[in-house]
Image (cartoon, rainbow, N blue to C red; front, side, top):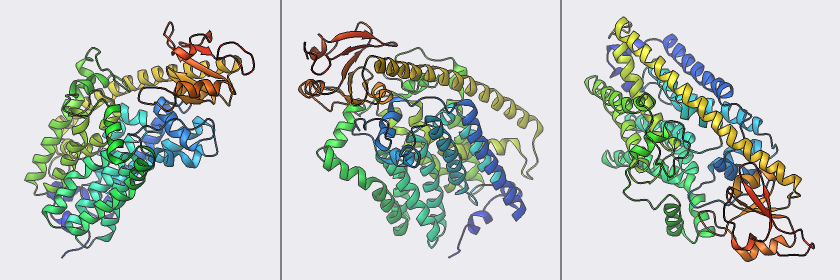
Length: 498
């Protein structure tokens, strides 16, 4: 049995050999990948702005590790990977810009390591191109410095699939097996259900070729990352089945739901499209989305002709299973859901583009290369426009929460305190309060508990302007905030309705 990655390199065609000949070429290729990863971090800091406030989901995750406000309600679909990811900063600093810089640097490092795992499987220029394609999507740039799980599932998927291919080529490659375990654990720690979907083709492959070590490494990684989620299910959610049922209800009752059109509508910059009933964006916004599978299919054809189909077919299969539940089993959309699929598609797409733009000797084809460069330039322009608008809109929304928090402080709602009602979770975090809900996906208290709390600390009930408050808060004093209304319970000991 041959060891290492040599068998894979030997099986490459002349075009691949031209790119991979010599240690100097390998070094230059990895240097190019490092440069792309560094540019990815820099672009996040310049285009997404470290000063942008925390979003709703980020508030939930960061509050588990931070000290600015009580931990927000942690609903059934969420996992503890992101709180662990932000803990090194959030546990001692309340600075959002510092957290953004930390995550931007970490995501740049993650991009580099995830694609470096593919060295020897694809030429260095393909890997650098894949990194550039993935890193310049507006959704990748936007979520790089954010405390959200999906990008990290994508990095884990890249590592897990690459190391699975290595272990498939060399059954005695222990480093590859450890990489499989680490990649699967990272995915499961971030989003256990996503990890299962991504690894499904890898598990099938391990069974088909009777690779017990590979199957064991995959299973061990899923268990290592998902065990805490399972234990928490029994401790806090009434069991694993009940947690899965709650997660399904929160996500709109998972089942057959065609969400392809919802994903298309979300590509204009809707970070959460629920309900997704807006107009379809202009074709220029989503043209790249339809180009991806076509280029990936061409990349597979190139790989088959070159006699290296497995290393292209496997990431394509994992990308398909990763995307399936978000395209066909959920009734709404968020662009970040498909980040793992985009990460896995980037490699065969980059391989296809490089094949179109170069000759077998490795030299550029002037005309096709110029056409591809022009198309990519237009694609980058569209991605920048969507990103810029998304950042502006998101910044404005989060600044409104901060202004509402400042107004609440002036009204005497200061920690310790409790907020309920519309947008209570983010506004409460910005105010330093606890948050509570008597119904809905984040229900964690009762009306009686809220009234009891109002006897000892400030309590406010938030609504949209003109909205109907909960029955227990109808007699509370009405105040107007930035885009919200709040009814504040009488101060403890002040008398009047409580």
